[in-house]
Image (tube, rainbow, N blue to C red; front, side, top):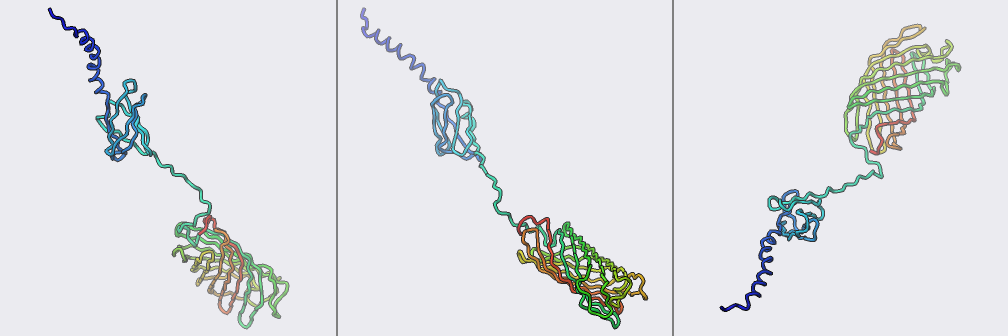
Length: 342
């Protein structure tokens, strides 16, 4: 019998090669493929893919696809990361079923407090809520019948306020004259007279206009109380020598024009329906009319504080009695809603 002397060597080589042949199909299953897209479903390139627990890595191509050779000692999951996106971990078994979607990292948007005050928005009206006070000099001129009195100057303190809600306006104004600085140079004038006159006006109406100007037509009422303080000695020869009260109702129209920090002020009022109540007068006084005209210039030193110079002319006429007053004022107005520059 012939025996092949190479048979032992052949058997030994076959035994050594058998593990490789058996292992080859297992190695073919250790490659994992998948696809990476952004939040809109668009492919992402150059995305880093790493098997967790191993050094096995790969990058996606222009179509967002990748193929990764898995390490059998690593975990059955991959971590996917890209610049500008939140990292994500996905199981290996689900890579072929659906793409891995990466969400962008939320953008950091810092907030800043303004260094300089912002400009006041246009919804802050010109005829806004306000309160003010002024010092005034009154120069009245009186005439009744053949009697006329001039050269009389009174001190006065005046205050005003206004409330605005929407387009509605409510205004209040009051002034008080006391202690004349000089008395009229007239033979009938008594130096002991210190007349007091208190005048109060209330109005309510609506505002109209734009960012440049506004007017506020209003219904207005007034009451004026006069106390002569002359110890019963006539000092003007007119109705002003007697204590009396005047009342009236009419129309008032305040207005304003804005020129930046400079503001032009004005108000006109007409009271066609008036009445007068006298105490101790020899004869009654018929009803009359009152006309007020006021002009002024204001300057805003701060967004809510305005200094102003005003001039007003007031005419009061009843029967043969006529009173005309020139009124000069210097005051300040506070506007609480204007906390920022316009």
